[in-house]
Length: 421
Image 1 (tube, rainbow, N blue to C red):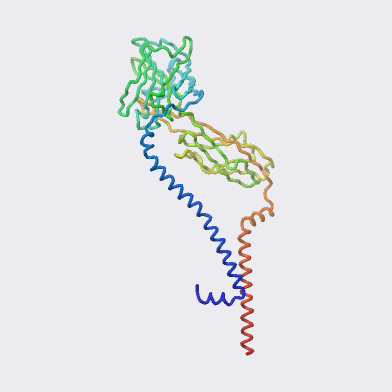
Image 2 (tube, rainbow, N blue to C red):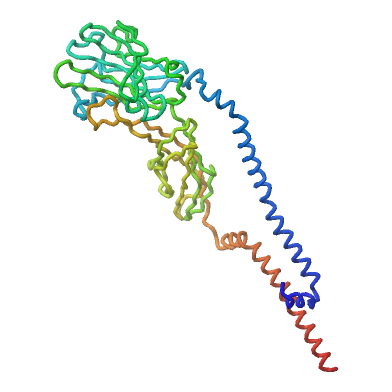
């Protein structure tokens, strides 16, 4: 601090007032700074605790991380709908309509108690004695670890019930597949008949999840195929891949009740969370048939990926016209969760890629349309945002002017005294 500034303060008749003012200002600034200290202390303490837990749990990780769970996730009945009369030619990689009714999948129902995955494949028709000029297979491919680098094209296990035209019998087999395109038969049951009912148009499939070490997250592709023993004819029918357990997503608008001024846009946060750790892409949309003409929606980012933490966030902007009816109404935002496609295992053609079943979720929130702001509202809003700063500047200015004025008067009196003397 310069000597001239010190002399200036000492010559000020209100120096005690200014010293008190700067002391109070310093205390306020100090309190603002120290208000962040607990947060840093908490963050530091949390980091120390996490590090301690990592070292403290080393033995636990080494002994328990490799232990197998006692069950897979259980879930109730689910259903897949499939396009009728829709096969794929394995050799050519193109759609085909030349399949038989006993490989025409219409629906698949599936559920799990955590020990077994059970499924019913509903067909357009079924025969327990297919023609002897072809092989017929019903089964499911299982990717038990969501890793395309394991197994064959990501497939780690196969369950299949196949018709042998030579022995005129059915066999159920359960295989494990290796990355080097080899397979190991874990179970095989000859003359298997416990998968259909006489006169029924369905087949029953199951897999013992214990044989796959109770996977906690896996995907399945059901299929029915027929392969002619002579000629080049191999067609397959399948719906989409399914994720197990069935993915659940939570969509939320923050806040859930939104006050909107007519004629003004309002932007809020739209959040998505996954409870099973899936990482799809999400596309948001609204149902135009349910939207009013005076309310429109826009998403800052769309078709965004779910992060590894199972979360994603975007901004939703609500636009209203100045003629919008002043009322509250419910609005719905939909989210379409899409997953990567998967190649068809064992395929001969490179053109066959199978999509995964999408998931659509929605959330409901309330919009309250209010009158547009008046000039007084704008003034109040301006004052609420800047009033504190203006008051501070005003008080500081008054104090400075008072000090300058009193200093000027005192100096003038001193000059007058020296002149008279």
